Length: 172
Image (cartoon, rainbow, N blue to C red; front, side, top):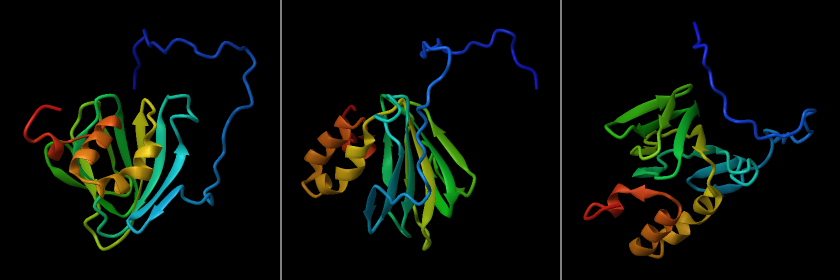
């Protein structure tokens, strides 16, 4: 494989010349940050812990877990990597079955969704870039949904989540 001679890296952001001791280790035995009958979410790297660079999460979905209906984000991309089990992924055009080792990258503005339609649990990694404060979304979306569709729509938009069902009669 050949690479272009004019490779361009981002501008340096670290001013030092010796490096720092600042890595963060999270053992696999760390309990999930959120758990519910539908699954659990592990906050591997948050917007806060990465200085806004990205958010990285391990999500375990129970059998028949609803996931997220088709939606898009205006400020961030989202990526999915299947660790185990199967997950139906909406790629903006059709639903495809993701299995262990499969990956879906959704650029900013790309329609996507996901759901576990099997009788088995599944596990995946999710990456948001740049980082965003997704933790509040994960922690509160079920509670806000119980308050009604208008409050849920406002909550979703506040969290850069534009669900097709919320805008079927108008512009996002």
